[in-house]
Amino acid sequence: MKSVDPSPVARRLRPYVVSADAELLRQAEAMGYIVQHAFSASGEAWFEALRALDRLVFQSSAMVLPGWVFFDCALAPGFVVGLADDLRAPSSGDEAPSPSGPRPVSLAIAIPTADPEIQLVHSLGVAPHGTSEALKTTWDLLVELVAWSPKSGGVLATAGWGTQAEELYARHAPIALLAAYMPAHDQPMTATLGLGPRFSSVPPEAVARVLACDADGLRALQSELDAGASAWVLGALAPGSDGTPVRRIAVLAGPMEAR
Amino acid sequence: MTILTLDARILSQAQPFIVSTRLNLPNADLAPLGVATRWVIDPLVSSNAEFFFQLQRLDRLTFGPEGMPMARWVFTNMAELPGFIYGFAIPVTELSTAERVVLEVPAGYRGPVSISMYIAVPTRAAGVWFGHNLASLNSLLPARDLKGLGTLTKVLGLAAFRAETAMGATQWKSKALHIHARLGPLRLLTAWTPAHSIPQSLTYSWPVSSETLRALKVGSPSPHKRPASNRWLAEGDEASMRALQAELERGAEAWLVARPEASPTGGTRLPLLVRAPAE
Image (cartoon, rainbow over all chains, first blue to last red; front, side):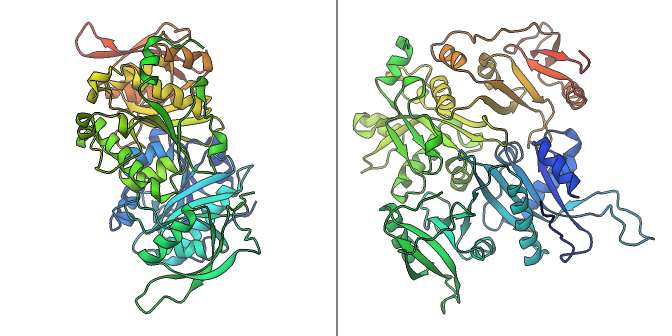
């Protein structure tokens, strides 16, 4: 088991996790996480701070989690992990701890899927004053907690093309591209990605090419996927002149084997 | 298996669908309690988009604009990708013109039209599923007399998901508690829930067994023995909710043992069984 050290991000940031899984919390606490049980009334301030952070991070993309969804579809079935500004921790010998307690500054949510080896990741974000390093550390924390599961084959993640989260995921290439364009999503230019050992094997017969992540390019690739093709993101390329994200991908005419 | 007239009437007019990714599908039962699933809908195939727009309409038509309808991205991330959506649909060619209008079916659509759905997501505990949406348009299709559609959808859905324990959250004042309490004694996991946007919510679980599901499916009482209550909770009594939550956090166990009922002093009260940790 590896412990993620958030110390390069900021002096007072500490990892936290909120969940209804008592065993996960016990393990996390032993690793230095701030922990909060989702079913405990003692966490009222934490829960409110998390909802406020979610609003702050995702309001601009109109993807704030409704309050009941935060409980029914995140805290109760899975976990929320992130970094908290631990105001209680004195930064030097003569500074008094703040009574207000830790304040979350980043978050990511993981919930199980019906495939016992796969978890779904969403709502990965950091407060506007946060850094890309904090975002990356949050992702690392999530990966660490996912890896604690006895069966861990990887994660599914949804992300808009060109967002911070998608660019972070692309750094793990090769990753499976399960959907390139999702018309039933509020933001159709959203990808569903598969990361981890179940998804990272690109067959040698897959053909590499360049994908311009604009609506036309994504729709065309989605048509191929609908027809039974498989695709992987191999990495990011320099964006086009209009800022359109560009990805190097590999496409196979048939279905991928998710081992 | 005995299928009573009630279920036969529904099954003769509508057939089940399941929404599942290719990854999740091997873990579903496609013939729950012997009822074959007609349509398997993959959320990652873009040509299925209209079906998902319909599910969103189903959600809105069931709960109304005040019922917190789910945004499309919430459907994707909280239903289609992690778990399953199970429900009943009718081929559009078998709907009357009036029904197509009521169900807001777009012109030119040729696929199945959903009339009910149950959504649950798996939790970190194996076999435990958290249900968060049960929708039925029975009331909009009076000529079809689909009484029991919501219950049948939930029962077959839980069987299709291979759930061993079902969880849910609702408000103490919710009318839905009258339906949930049919499932048998509900074990209380929270009684005051600040992690929910409405703290006056309870979180409950109940063991799913094929006997329970079959009994519910044919409209019989749950086969679970119902213990006697030893405490009443008035539905608006926040102090008692908080006190019960404190007891639960100290290790007590509690169940909602039967449906809410009218209180002799006015309002509604809920029959509980509370066991202290030492008992």
